[in-house]
Image 1 (spheres, rainbow, N blue to C red):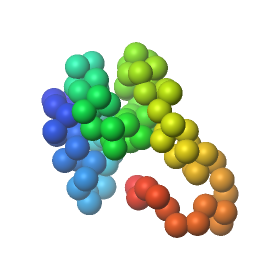
Image 2 (spheres, rainbow, N blue to C red):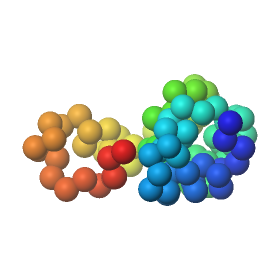
Image 3 (tube, rainbow, N blue to C red):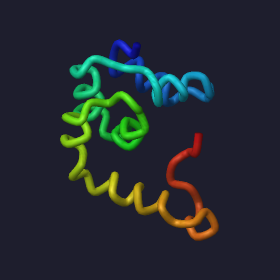
Length: 89
């Protein structure tokens, strides 16, 4: 279980594939998710990849225009994307 927003940020910023798997699969308390999306806006995109994130958190970030741009970027075929704005795990 991810216990804090700081732990989540450390995991995401690491170059360890196992850490990235943790941010995609492990649960966190609701307050941790809310802390991440409210105080670390650059992590919102990555929160959407977690399979356990509560719907309440997804609703909170659903209007973020940066997330919409990132989603559109990922929907394009790889040859049309140009340089990646986000590292691909």
